[in-house]
Image (cartoon, rainbow, N blue to C red; front, side):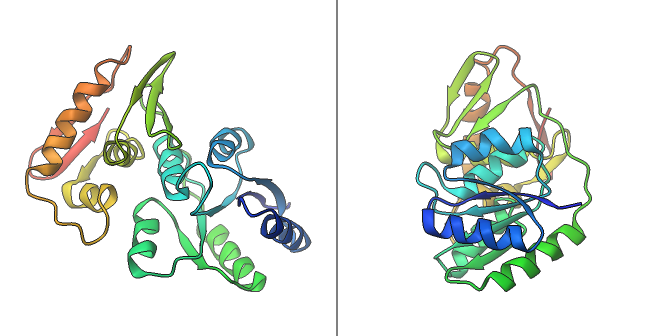
Length: 221
């Protein structure tokens, strides 16, 4: 059976090259050009692996990955990027990415990495928390018809907790996920942001609770 692959790349030429090349390598490829399309198609198509450009035109590919993780999707993600700085690679892994390829790249390397991700895959998909839908294109969260705007930092905190419903997420992990690598974050800064996030979530019809797990971090749901 051909592995189902969802590709998100806004460069038309590169998207075409990857689509053709990966199809020839035995993948069943669906290609999109924006983060919003990726959010729309990923839950419906249930791909076996995702290939996501970090620099999508409407959103950061890493934020889209976090949103999908927050909705319970455990599909392995390979990021494509033109940026090779250590901080960029770390940010990609902290956003829930599984591997990273820097442009320009050789198709053979992409194929090898994808097959390695598929071999390691096997986690069962998670569940949504309280019917929340996270949208990284405008950093918002919605439930039913209600919509709440978040800051990018609030969005990343919520996505990190929503990706592990009912489980405590350590403070250091939340800080590393929500703030840029190397940022100086004061001891109480995380608590201030979580308090703001709690207040915003209260405007939803049935808001999930963010519980404090003393000595550990926070838990959603």
